[in-house]
Length: 150
Image: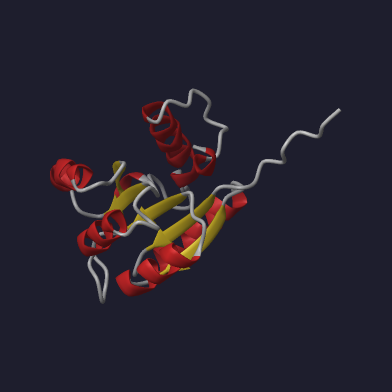
């Protein structure tokens, strides 16, 4: 019998200029089983996105060097990164959601919803739902299918 292909962990680029938020989100995502690469500014995010085989990018909007909207636009224009799903994580209100989705973001999550009480970070749970929605839009019914297998 042929061995089943071993599934690999989902690789996420997490982009945020707030070190405490970046480290906390990276910690809970790693604990949930994701491979996480971090960037603290837009230029680093672009460089890392081109260098790594990413499954997903979680992108803050207010960043030094290149803003989140500039990074989103550049990611969607570059052939090597255009197909990587980008989920916006922002402290900005939902009023920007539709504009960012039209610019290529898969989803928009307000940061303040991720830590409803001190010491509780629900990002892995929220992310699982987001990945399911992305997979459904791409015609994949199962949430356990890594994004890179699309």
